[in-house]
Length: 56
Image (cartoon, rainbow, N blue to C red):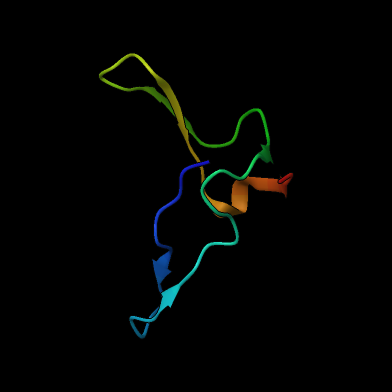
């Protein structure tokens, strides 16, 4: 997993994500949006709510 810095709440306070770079996660087959990068690498963009489990 690669992650960003989290999101901002209504007051502008940063809310960290429950996952970290390098974690393995489980998600539904139909979750997220798939796309191919300019280098040909396949990516999936997920919302935290799409995650079913953090495996490591």
